[in-house]
Amino acid sequence: MRFIVDLNKCQDQVQCVFAAPQRFAVDDDGRLALRGQANGAVFESEVIPEDEIDSIEEAVMICPVQAISIEP
Ligand code: SF4
Image 1 (cartoon, rainbow, N blue to C red):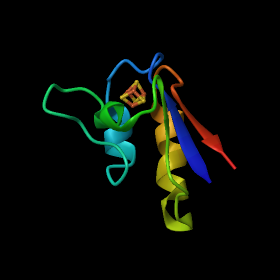
Image 2 (spheres, helix red, strand yellow; image 1 turned 45 degrees about the horizontal axis):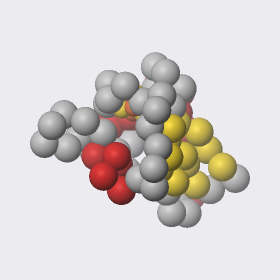
Image 3 (cartoon, rainbow, N blue to C red; image 1 turned 90 degrees about the horizontal axis):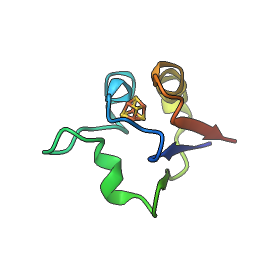
Protein backbone atom coordinates (compact mmCIF):
# COMPACT_ATOMS: atom_id res chain seq x y z
CA MET A 1 0.00 0.00 0.00
CA ARG A 2 1.07 3.55 -0.71
CA PHE A 3 -0.50 6.83 0.23
CA ILE A 4 -0.91 9.88 -1.94
CA VAL A 5 -1.22 13.49 -0.80
CA ASP A 6 -2.81 15.99 -3.17
CA LEU A 7 -0.89 19.12 -2.20
CA ASN A 8 -3.31 21.35 -4.09
CA LYS A 9 -6.03 20.23 -1.67
CA CYS A 10 -3.84 20.16 1.45
CA GLN A 11 -4.27 23.24 3.62
CA ASP A 12 -1.42 22.45 6.02
CA GLN A 13 -3.78 21.87 8.90
CA VAL A 14 -1.43 19.07 10.02
CA GLN A 15 -3.94 16.80 11.75
CA CYS A 16 -2.26 13.99 9.81
CA VAL A 17 0.89 14.59 11.87
CA PHE A 18 -0.97 13.55 15.01
CA ALA A 19 -2.45 10.48 13.33
CA ALA A 20 0.74 9.20 11.70
CA PRO A 21 3.79 11.05 13.03
CA GLN A 22 6.12 8.47 11.52
CA ARG A 23 5.09 9.66 8.02
CA PHE A 24 3.86 13.23 8.41
CA ALA A 25 5.72 16.17 9.91
CA VAL A 26 5.68 19.94 9.96
CA ASP A 27 8.50 21.96 8.43
CA ASP A 28 10.07 25.12 9.86
CA ASP A 29 7.41 27.25 8.15
CA GLY A 30 4.55 25.29 9.74
CA ARG A 31 3.69 23.55 6.49
CA LEU A 32 3.41 19.87 5.73
CA ALA A 33 7.01 18.70 5.35
CA LEU A 34 6.14 16.28 2.52
CA ARG A 35 5.81 19.29 0.24
CA GLY A 36 9.59 19.36 -0.02
CA GLN A 37 9.67 15.77 -1.30
CA ALA A 38 6.76 15.98 -3.70
CA ASN A 39 6.87 15.59 -7.42
CA GLY A 40 4.83 18.61 -8.46
CA ALA A 41 1.52 18.86 -6.64
CA VAL A 42 1.39 15.20 -5.66
CA PHE A 43 3.35 13.32 -3.03
CA GLU A 44 3.41 9.55 -3.47
CA SER A 45 4.85 7.52 -0.62
CA GLU A 46 7.00 4.45 -0.80
CA VAL A 47 5.32 1.15 0.03
CA ILE A 48 4.11 1.34 3.62
CA PRO A 49 4.77 -1.56 6.01
CA GLU A 50 1.67 -3.35 7.30
CA ASP A 51 2.13 -2.12 10.85
CA GLU A 52 1.69 1.48 9.65
CA ILE A 53 -1.51 0.95 7.70
CA ASP A 54 -3.86 1.71 10.60
CA SER A 55 -2.22 5.06 11.31
CA ILE A 56 -2.28 6.05 7.63
CA GLU A 57 -5.95 5.11 7.42
CA GLU A 58 -6.55 7.32 10.44
CA ALA A 59 -4.73 10.19 8.69
CA VAL A 60 -6.96 9.69 5.65
CA MET A 61 -10.07 9.91 7.83
CA ILE A 62 -8.89 12.85 9.92
CA CYS A 63 -7.74 15.10 7.06
CA PRO A 64 -10.39 17.83 6.89
CA VAL A 65 -10.01 18.38 3.15
CA GLN A 66 -9.66 14.75 2.01
CA ALA A 67 -6.19 15.41 0.64
CA ILE A 68 -4.81 11.96 1.51
CA SER A 69 -5.74 8.81 -0.36
CA ILE A 70 -4.57 5.22 -0.29
CA GLU A 71 -3.45 3.18 -3.25
CA PRO A 72 -3.51 -0.62 -2.82
S1 SF4 B 1 -4.38 16.75 7.51
FE1 SF4 B 1 -4.76 17.04 5.32
S2 SF4 B 1 -4.81 19.26 5.06
FE2 SF4 B 1 -3.81 18.83 6.99
S3 SF4 B 1 -1.63 18.77 6.52
FE3 SF4 B 1 -2.40 16.68 6.47
S4 SF4 B 1 -2.89 16.37 4.31
FE4 SF4 B 1 -2.74 18.55 4.61
